[in-house]
Image 1 (cartoon, protein in one colour):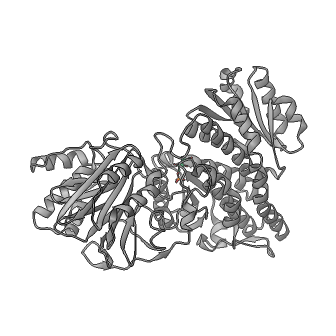
Image 2 (cartoon, rainbow, N blue to C red):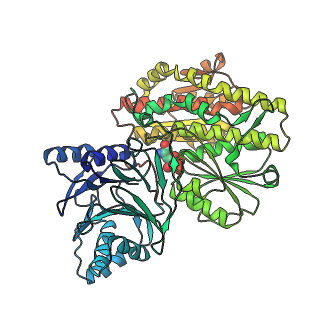
Length: 609
Ligand code: M6R
């Protein structure tokens, strides 16, 4: 939810922190702050609102110091305000925190009886006072952090510094991501690698319970008893430029246009054309294990859940295995009848979504093999899974997920091919046929992207409407859901996605001339049924926006406007339609004058439930 950054070294920390926060702003953006340690004093600068407010404050009142921490917030406890912005102070120390302290009320009462006075509405402030109270009793900052961990229930990544230990930042995590790295100018910490890439490509992802001590010349990772731990250093090959907007007006548009490359990257080196097989070395499952898996479970949230639903249609058709798709927050709290030998697939762009992570842990506890389809390398999900397929999308900065969705579906295509070949449901020749289709997709997505001017015209016609209905059938039912989600999250227009066949069972009551109906209608075996649904919509005077195949003249007769995408095998249509719907949502939001990259009330990574 929030982003934290820290630097200790030889340079002025302010620009490092501000630049770092800019790259973390997608994690939360209702307030921000930094703290610098200099000459035995800590200066704290905080501001409500977007980071630019903090930047202006810092410009007007520059602070020096080569040890500093920073934070960009997405409120959980307490309003977005300067008072609730981090860093929070207690005595000689300050800290920043990402996550939620579940027992903060009882801790607050305990600390109040010790004489601490609370000045914010946050749960974070209890951590500051807790550390201070341990330090007052003789602990070092690191010892205080270890002691506080016993008291704290919930999820957190914390970074703290104090006057009595200059040139040191102490940081720890439990359930929230934290990464550290260093170069010749000093040591860095952050919630993810994005702000570190301009400083170093060699990073260490901390594990739950690790305490890291950062000084200008080294980073030590300590275990429960203060023993030094060796943690693997990971080389990140993301281009720092990849996190920039690269000439587009915003990250969302840039990321939509990156999708042909995402397909190329996600396929790269992962198939053998000769044998018609997919090659997924990190799957960590043998052919026997894949064959033995009785049932496939797919669990995810939001857009990733929609790609999971696409996976269901794909797997049932291509590999003839029963597939159950669940939302993370539902799976974790029911009694899923998952069995040992079932294959559990968690899908997540960030790899940090609390509900998906909890579901994956539950599945593991019940004996299932956990495979994750994840974008962020070294994320908690990736580290806790038995097998991984990374989607290789690069950082997705825009809160609305676009390219990650495409990467996830490509990973599912590879997995379907792999299992299909292993189970001998597909011959080598059929495998090659699928690979030809997969590798042709980037060019087909390029063709859809070229339709942007036409799609923009549709947006211009309908952007002032208040409600939209999205319809699709079969493997494109999840695409209707995804199209509606994209529209609602960035344009704040009410939009519903429905299985077209379900329309008569309720939503048709809403349909009138003020409700544009967006329909995804490939020429597949359900085409005629979808056209019938469109007739029903037309009979109620609703404007129909259809996405169909090139050369489909019939669709023209039942729709007000048609966008023609390249004709492909029905199972390969979801990405192409999704790209068209992303562009529609994008242009509607831009025409409404909204900040598409940072929609209100949303955060990129939902690390609390
Ligand atoms: O990082 P994850 O893929 O696990 O995130 C899941 C959802 O929070 C995410 O897809 C969300 O729905 C996006 N805002 C969709 O654009």
